[in-house]
Each structure stands twice: as C-alpha cells, then as structure tokens.
Amino acid sequence: MLHQLKKISDYLFEIPKSYKPGMRVPARIYAGEDLMDGMDSAVFEQLSNVAMLPGIVKYALCMPDGHSGYGFPIGGVAAIDPETGVISPGGIGFDINCGVRLIATNLVFDEIKNNVKRLVDTMFTRINSGVGKGGILSLTSPALDDAVIGGAEWAVEKGYGTARDLEYIEEKGRMKDADPSAVSPRAKERGRGQAGSLGSGNHYLEIQVVRKENIFDPAAAEKFGIFRDGQVMIMIHTGSRGYGHEIASEYLRRFVTAMQGRYHINLPDRELACAPFNSKDGQDYFKAMNCAINFAFMNRQLIMHAAREVFSDILKKSPDELGMNLVYDVCHNTAKIETHQIDGKKMKLLVHRKGATRSFTAEMKGVPEAYREVGQPVLIGGSMETGSYLMAAAEGSSKTFYSTVHGSGRVMSRSQAKKIFRGIELQKKMMGKGIYVQTSSMSGLAEESGAAYKNVDRVVQCSEAAGLSRPIAKLIPIGNIKG
DNA sequence: ATGTGC
Image (cartoon, rainbow, N blue to C red; front, side):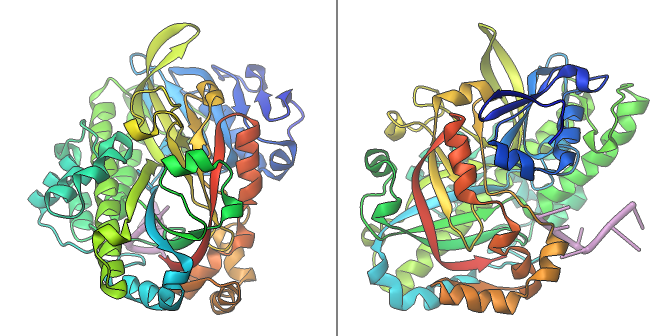
C-alpha cells in the first residue's frame, strides 16, 4: 500500500493533496485494508491524477470495487463544478451507461428447474450476443435518432414493455439532454443494427434464484418484489454497444487536441482528456453521451421484453402469472448533473461515475414512490460463478455524492485469465455447480471466470461497513448467457 | 467495453 495513505477510518483511506503537485483536492478510497492491499498501485496514481481535474469538488473518490482503468479507475467518482470545470469521457468509460436491470418473476426454482436449458437456449437464439453482433431491431438512422431521444420510453411506445417499467428505471429511462446532432454518422451506422443486443466481455443475461437464507432484510426485499424462498430473478447486464463506444472514442480523440491547443489544460495523463463543460466541445460530448445513455436504456428494455416473451412461450404462462416485474435499472457509467449539499450549500455538480452506482437515499427525488421507505435499489453484478447482489442506498453515501459499488471488480486481466482458464472446462465446472451457461465465445467465457474477480461478498461487506449501501439479497445464478 | 490497432 502507498505509504502516504492516511487511514481515516477502518473503511476509508486518503491520499493527501501534497502527494503530487497539481492535485486540487485529496483523493479518498473507500475499502477495507484487505481490498486496499489487493488494489493495483495504478489505482492510486490514477485517482491522484483525477484530483487534478479543473473544477473537481471535495475529493477524487474510489469505491471498494475499484481497479485501474482508462485514465480514471473503474469504481471512480468525480464531482465537478460545471460552471468552472470540465467533462472527461475517461471518467464515464467507453461503455456509456453500461448498467444492470433486475426483474422479479412470480416463479420459484422448482417450477422452472426442468426448463432452464430450454429457457437459456431459446433466449440465446433470440438475443444476440458477441462482438459486433446485430440486435433485435435494425433501425434506419432517423429511427435510431428517435430511439436515442426517447430511450426506454421509445421502446415502450413501440410496444416493448409497459408504462410501469419506466417508473423503475433510473431517470425513468430517458435523459432529456440527448441530442443526436452531436453524434457522428459513423456512430449511428455502428449503432443502428444493435438495438437489443448483449455484446461481449462481462455482459450477460442471467437467470438467478433467491434463497431464503440469502435475504438479509425481508421487509426491504418485499418492497423490491422479493417475497418467497426460491424466487426466480432475471438480471441483464449490458450497455450502449458500438454506438457508445464510437462516441467515447471520437470525443476522446477530439478532446486530446482541444485540451492542449484550445483550453491549455495540462494533466499528467492524456487518458484524462477533457474539455470545459461550458464549451462547445464539452456540450457536444454531453449531448452525445446522453444519446448513448438512452441507447443503453432502450437496449436493456428490448432485451427484457424478449426475455418476457421467451418465458411466456416456454412456460406457457400469461404475463400476469409470470410477474416479471422490473425491480430497477441502474447506470454504472455516466456523468449527470445533480444537486448536492457541499459544506452546507446547495450546488449543481456534474457527477462522473465510472463503474459506480448512484445510491440515492429514501427521501431523495428520483427514488420510485414504492421504494420511498427503503431507498434506491443498487444492483451489483458479480461474476457469473459467484452471484450478484441486490442492495439499497445507505445514508453514508452522502459522503460520496450518493454513489456506491457496482460489481466485483477484476483482480486479473482478461489476457491473464485467458491463459489460466479454459472456457470449455469452466462451462463443465459451472454445470457441476448447477449453472447452465451458453456463450458465443469460449475464450470470452474463460475471461469471466469467478477467480478473475474480487470476492463479491467482501466488496458488498465493505460498502456496507463504509455506509454507502446495504445488502438486501444475494442472487445465485442457475442459467447464464454470456456475451 | 469495442466491427479486440494507429
């Protein structure tokens, strides 16, 4: 561990401003000592560089699942004054609005145990996965523009889902500042065939089971729609596909030159490329990024609809019998304008969350009415071997601009994991554990081995101990379509 | 994460 690190409490460490010249604020990492020890030293270097961004307020933050990423750590949170500060694509990530949605069925494990293979195989044929694969819809470029203006709302208007769904999506599935005039023809060309597709890497669609012993707060779980032992859940983890990736790549290139040439911003890492939020560059990226956020909301909505159809076809049950209500849909990679209390004063901030989940507490605007007593659901995608968590926001997140963890966090690079593990063997091993996996890429499967990730239970414990979010239920996989 | 490279 970095020797300049100051231990503030058992679950909070600080890199002082004096660590490097140019830091405007200290950097803070929320984690237990064991997770701190396991963190790549690049996390501390990256986070102290983030602390140099113009306009950054209070602290550059890292969540307990942090690991090094492009410019910013994954698990990084940076709140920036939009009047004086910048927007940085590296603080959002290449997969803009990579996120997770969770669906609660009325079914229990025993009712589907003989059909898991059929359900997975049928969803695997209906929902494309893999690099460069097309989606459920193929849109014309103008139709794509409509889709990214409307987000999940557009999908529901087209018949993919219900008005109820929208109430249970962060921002109701639609960012208002999306403007496709800031999106290049190339990004549109890449995106228009990918509406309703999983993608690759750690993206997946998973069938999960909640066991009674894994429900940690039964009253809160019931509010979220989990009320019986063995209840079957569906989790969807995907983002904005080639559309968001193209937007991120293009603006990163544009910002690298604009940052030095036009804005004279000097930072030690070009991966922190940024532009003033109040500039044409900054505003163009913000408009395009919001289009990508909406693309991902729309994408997850289409995939959920397909999953509902497959369950209905295979199990011969009506939507009412199936339930399949949306618990919630969260973003893991965004920058959003939010109002926060800073030293007793209300302040509008551009909150960058990269591999971090919004964690709005019970009383805050934006939490669905039905969850008013519990707070915002926080969805933690674990590895496909070890399971995932449904959490709820906790009061301590007022210290992190209302942010918390998003997943396990890798401990092993993809290339390293591919060397050590074999996809076909992993598939067999998982079958032995009662998890049926379909994949379009065996080498991709190997990269997602549970051993390549941090212990999700420990990540959840640390975020609870740090007061950021608290566990409601653990979700155990029984079937998985890995992108 | 990604039509898996500048």
